Image 1 (cartoon, rainbow, N blue to C red):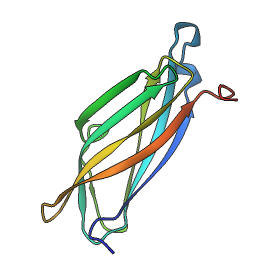
Image 2 (cartoon, helix red, strand yellow):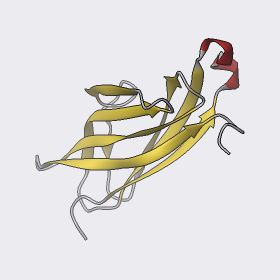
Image 3 (cartoon, rainbow, N blue to C red):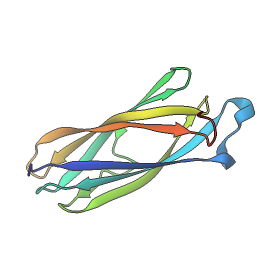
Amino acid sequence: MSDYTIKISVKTAYLDEHSQPENNRFAFAYTISIENGGHATTQLLSRHWIITDAKNTTQEVVGEGVVGKQPHILPGESFTYTSNAVLETSAGTMEGTYTMRTEDGKVFNVPIPAFSLARPNSLH
């Protein structure tokens, strides 16, 4: 097994109370678990998101850490956080990359596979 085997899992939710469909504002929450299946402690340094709505409009988000943290994740442990995104359409996708560093200084990228954001009953 590699020193750095990171597994990403995602759950999404539509935030009806924060959305205003009449103003083309659709809010979503996403909860991400980052599981360290490797043998080395890793630190999440930064994130890079590409958010695409149903009109194919993209937003790019780049920044340090996630939710104000740059967590160290021990082997066999995971870090879970929830954040949100606002789209101008009732559906879209997110994908991206986390940049991580092992305790011995190796920097590597972890792809975040594309996942859907969709208002219930908006996709046929």
